[in-house]
Image 1 (spheres, rainbow, N blue to C red):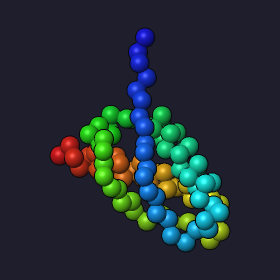
Image 2 (cartoon, rainbow, N blue to C red):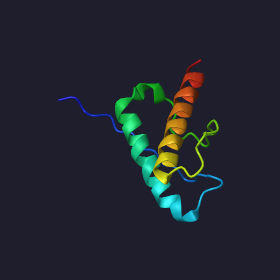
Image 3 (cartoon, helix red, strand yellow):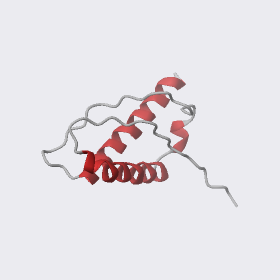
Image 4 (cartoon, rainbow, N blue to C red):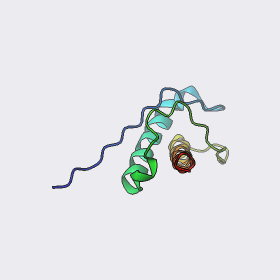
Amino acid sequence: MKATPRIEFLIDELILHGFSAADRDAIGDSLSRELGRLAAAGNLSALDGLADTPALRTANISLSAGARPETVGAQTAQAVFGSLRGNAGEQKK
């Protein structure tokens, strides 16, 4: 039986400007769910060598005014995962 690879994302600090403090848990929960979904669906070997990445800056995310916290979290996760994959590609060069 083949072992399922395990990946753990630990985000010490996430800085999002312009959002209500009341939305932080919903944004964080959505971000966590989406990162898990992307990791499960994606090619995890593309993330090799990224253990202990000290900091990551993503591209800006475009949101419509009044975007729901769930949307903010999901789009943030997509930007983070995309940046991780991009950084992995850069490190392999």
